[in-house]
Length: 311
Ligand code: PSU
Ligand code: MN
View 1 (cartoon, rainbow, N blue to C red):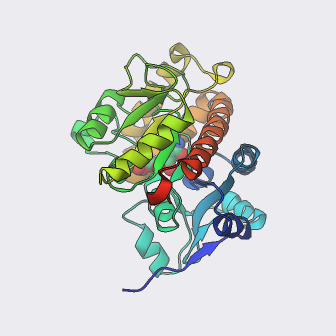
View 2 (cartoon, rainbow, N blue to C red; view 1 turned 120 degrees about the vertical axis):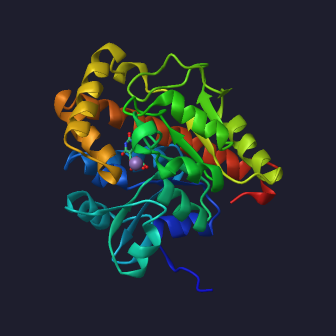
View 3 (cartoon, helix red, strand yellow; view 1 turned 30 degrees about the vertical axis):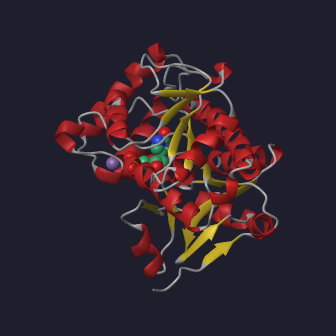
C-alpha cells in the first residue's frame, strides 16, 4: 500500500510538532459557496477566529494533485479567485489526487483529509443533507455517510432550509450520527438560530462535546459527531423572510433541471442574489462563530485526561 504524502503548511506543521490544537476548515465554501472577493475575506476571518481562540487553522484543498493541510496566503487567494475548480466529495478525491487535479473539498472530503492528517475537529457553515424532493431525485449528500464513518467532530450552524430538515435528521439517526445542539433545545437552522424541530441531543459546553467525542471512540463506535451551533442573534435572518426566497430558488433549480453537484452551489448563489447579499453576511457571521467553538473543542480534546486515544 502506498501512503499519501500530505502537504502541511508551516503553521500546521509547527502546531503538530508541538501538540497544539488544530481546526480543519473546508474549501468548497470558498470556491462554490461564496463570490469573490468576500469568499477570500471570509476565509481569512475564519482562520483568524480560530487563531484568536487559541488553535491553528488548517484549510484543506487539493492543489495540482497534492493534498494540502493548511494553505498559505497565496494559495488561499489563488483558490478564491480560481474559476471552474472541481468540487470534491468522497467519490472524487482519489481521482483528483491521482490525476494531478485541483479541487476544493466538501465536508465529506475535508473529514477524510482531516482524519488522514490526525485532526479531529472541523468547523464549517452548513453541511449537505437530504434535499427537498429527495424521494424523487435521490439527492442525499455524501456528507451524511461520512459523518457515520469518519471520527471527526464537525461544527456547523445546522442545515440550510434548502434541505429537507426532518428527512436529514431521520437519515442521521439511522446512520447513528449524534446531532448535538449547542446550548439550546431546538435544532439551529443556519440563518435562524432555531427551527421548529427539537434537536436530538443538547450539550452546553465544549468540554462535554470533547468528552462525548472521546467516549464514542472508547466504545469503538465509528463515525463522528455533528454539533449544531446557533447563529448569533444579531446576524439572524427571519424564517418569514428567507422561506419564500428558498422556495423560489428551489423551484428555479427544478425548472432548469439542475442536478447532482450543481444543486447546492446553484441554490446558494440564487439565495445570495435574491437577498441582495444579506444571506452572505449571515453566513460569514455563523462560520466565524463556529470556528471559535471548534477551537475550544479542539483545545479541550488535547487537554482531556483520557485523551490517550486522541488525535
Ligand atoms: N451547505 C452550505 N454551504 C456550503 C455547502 C453546503 O450551507 O458551502 C457545501 C459544503 O462544502 C458541503 C457541500 O459539504 O456543499 C455539500 O454538497 P452536496 O450537497 O453536493 O453534497
Ligand atoms: Mn447532492
